[in-house]
Length: 104
Image 1 (cartoon, one colour):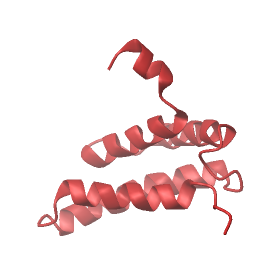
Image 2 (image 1 turned 45 degrees about the vertical axis):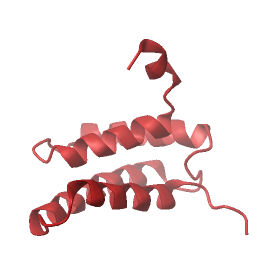
Image 3 (image 1 turned 90 degrees about the vertical axis):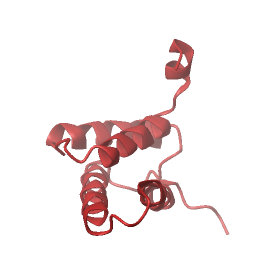
Image 4 (image 1 turned 135 degrees about the vertical axis):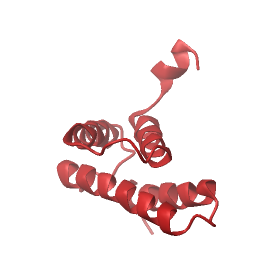
């Protein structure tokens, strides 16, 4: 990754990167600092329109951490499922939950 790539990353990209990192590293603690980081990224993503502005930031951050806990539990109980497949499902769930609703 070049310096320009890091500058061009959106808050949404950084949020998914953090989600991936925590999901791929079950030994990492899910502390209040992690929740604060999720909250900061959610706030930034709300500002740029990639996260639904009706979501409460602190609650969303707490639930994102909870989804990582759930992902870790699922990986422990279903090792026969590909880690990439499980991560893909986690990303779809988070994306559909956080993105603003589309008009029908």
